Amino acid sequence: EDWPLVINFLKEALKFIDECMDDSRTLLIHDDDGGSFATAYLVIWLCTRKKVRVADALEHVGKIRREAKVSRGVAKGMKKFQQSLDTMKLKRLEKRLRNSDVVSIGF
Image 1 (cartoon, rainbow, N blue to C red):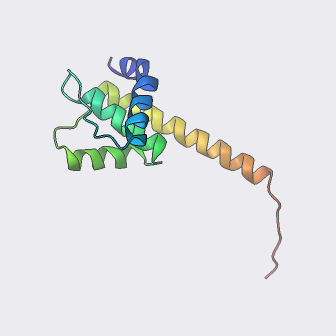
Image 2 (cartoon, one colour):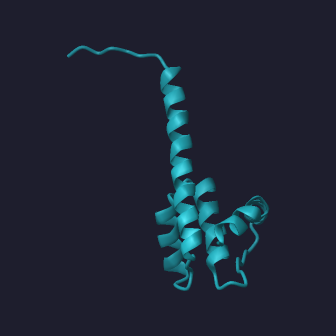
């Protein structure tokens, strides 16, 4: 399955993309397997840095590069990745709400 390989190099790939973006460098992301890994790294970067959902990021990348596709294994992993992002966001929101003041407004 491809997803474990994507995860294995994820930190390095995101760091490299961040560095290129910080330096305003032109960036070409490609891989040897036909686009699945490159697409995955770009989609994950969009999700984590630009706060875009996986489906929206895939659609965006697909509009720019029609050949951009992910394998079934990567798609399955990205679905779990989105679920974990959603869970983390929900936990942060619950924590903020727990620590916030409540004001009652009567109507």
